[in-house]
Image (cartoon, rainbow, N blue to C red):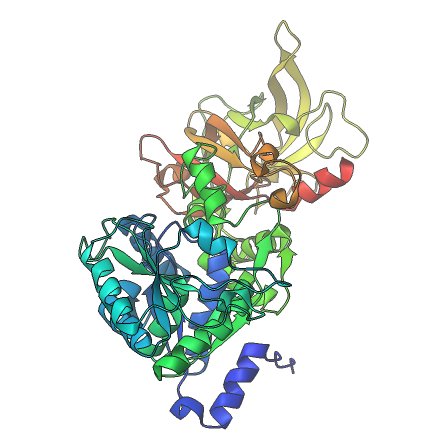
Length: 555
């Protein structure tokens, strides 16, 4: 009997709350992305956590877009986020936007002004920053801090009406300029931004800050467990202060640690730089750590969920080896991907004793890991394409592929004996010559021969061509953000290598966008979204084994 998986600290909190009858036995979480970019693998773990907890405890999970900054937000990002969540296998119970609450948030701000707990400040951003103080020195009160309630109400209404320019005035909470937590030193609640909003248009020219919008939105939706990353732990006292002063539903914030990933960056700002400066082809470039990039590369949603579950959650930040993610991808693809024969670096093999006009059709197993995987028909002829690396004119002792006198099994076909090769004037091998043993037909072998090597092949007259994009790690170092200089200095120049015309077996020409297969002995590949029936394009998802780690050890 297998051991039951222990609860993580958030599950313990929820189970304690349920046992005590808190929130009437409800569990209601939310996933609150800002629509200012595409989601990445870090967001995937948060999605799995919030939706997973709601599912486990028969609760609900809202999708709420934190759209309080009209400068950086776009509808394109909203749609991409929704697509990513659905692809990961989750469905939200309610779809909300912080902008849905702009009228309520404004009313909340007015309530705080009337209670003497908020004031309009004419100071510039630089002046406010200069008076914040530090962890060892108290802040300095703003000269506008003691304006009357009446004046603050008038000025705030004028801010809303568009009377002032960007940066001319802000609304600040009136808390304590000597508070040990700097975020409690009269934080900003509203700023002026005369910008068009992707949902509210030009209705508003003042927008709430994250700290004022977030907790109140949670409260309006009666979120029971508001789960954030660890960077927001210092924001929790402010989160609680606003809720207490307004006397609204007491949502509670909990924090867990981010999980960064080796050989990539997870900052939206840095990812945007990679896109805008054309280091990658876009947000969904298969080298990007975005969910859309991973989907395009061929990563299965199940593997991302398994990865999130495997790394779990903690209270301390750490960096996770990308090899673990690739392991989860391989593990899933091994069970689900059909095996196909594709020759990436071809050399012709001629079977000298095979009749020129003869053709065979062989039955090839689709997936040995899937008992219901079935078979497919693969044509065979006198001339085949094989991998150049599968022949050596002077092979070392334990080389079990083709070399003069060596016997090798052609996958699903015959055993052949290598007789030699043909070269061009530069000494490059142009043809490998073999003879076949007719009695060695796969599945009906009566030859009595025992061979150690098996190689894949594609029939020359039946072969189709495809473009293959060989993707690798985007960065050369484990933690590019933590290295000296600019993180872009560590971009891997060999992160993509294009093979314009490889040979594929004819059945594979029917593959459609998103289809995942294993190229025998080469790795897992996925049909790219840009692929067409006339020009098939495959992306390498992941190698069969962790070749990168071996290369690093050599270096």
